[in-house]
Length: 263
Image (cartoon, rainbow, N blue to C red; front, side, top):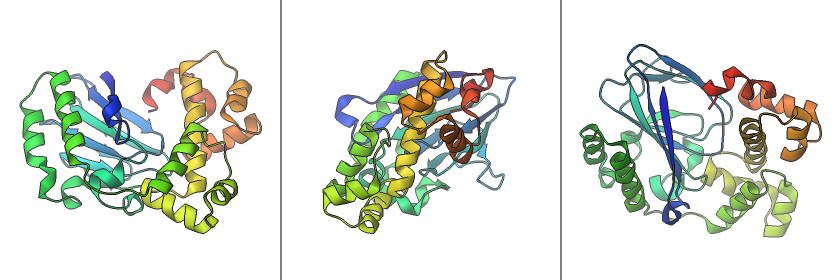
């Protein structure tokens, strides 16, 4: 497997986290566990690619799919000799780009063509990707395509709250955020749910979980108790319970050989 990550340029960071290119060799299928991270994805598949997931009734994904925000992990299988481009939107990029509440696509894999109009120009961008062998040119095309599609309004108050949760890696209380924003907890959670497809509390949990995952990945020599403390968990046992609930894995799995197949 070959995988490359291209972070979003500054001008697109409110919409886009970045773009992954993943390619399998001619002899090996790929199986991986995908962890929740509070973002939606748009997945483009090149001709002959065979991608399916545990939440899609065993069916292969269509050539251009929307993978909505996830509340828990799911498994994917990518066939040999396959190539995909994963457009990872920002946590608040789904609504302005797609024009629909993210709460409508949570924990779903759906054909993107079924939820967007002709202005999305899916056939043109798909054909351009299929005919281009240079990954850098494909990434550039996708970045320009994302930038040109953002035509819908998002709730700025909700986005400020979401940004604060991200900056604090989920280490914040919904009640305090609601009081600060002069909103009821229910109304705040409803606003956040529309933008990210998750309740405010669950989004904060996933941000803390993602922080712990990234720490374990980039600093593999850290002890688990140190990761738990740095990520804002009360103790290692609390972190372990959250890894099981949200990721279906143990914290130590990220630091093991299995970690390469946990995304």
